[in-house]
Length: 333
Image (cartoon, rainbow, N blue to C red; front, side, top):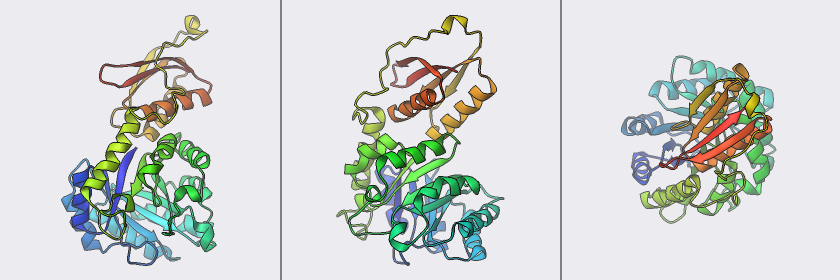
């Protein structure tokens, strides 16, 4: 998991960066329920954020106008935003598809990624069912998706969609290589649930503002604290799975002696879990005879690789830790 912090201006972006945010996401909290920042603010932030950090753009709840949204997406691409999020509230499903298709075309000549977004509390607005997010993103070739919330009354993401459902949605998308992000009034107290779900991105704002108030401004010390707690779960220092599927003792495989394939290594260092699972899927589909050794830098992604192997009927032969803390998982297709 990496940390995305929502910001409204350059000062907040720099505070987020100082605290260790991986992504600064520019939005406008004063415009409608969630709105888009002015393009010069986005440009200012983009130019100030160095690689490998990301500067993304949220368009918020977009209008029912295909061309207008596509133009806004095109502008985000021309500014050089890492990604642009297109959110739907009370839209018809087919219209949402049309808007995302047009948005994808608008980004064709850029490196900007398209992120479709639905809101977990859309039911309060007679809106588009958020559980359609995976289907919607897949049918429109989005690079990833975000589930967020619109209400700011103290309820958060988990008040509208429970952990098991979110985990299924995230895991289904990871297997296709699609990035996943969860947001919606999340706090440090939610990090255990988030770690068990293990989205690629966790998005926050209120939790990293100076007084815990999303309107009070992002503060680097609060960002740093949130980031530290997130990393403690990634490293396994805080165990959110109770040891399940996490042992590193040698396993056994009844068919080892008859296996005649080769040996392939997939290094997950610096990769999202989605890209690792996609690479694994392509590897075993194209070469079902070779053992695959996966090098995993963090515990949470290790757990997901083991689940992927078990769900696919593959054998986890061994798990062992390197001296640098990385886990090597040997899989026999």
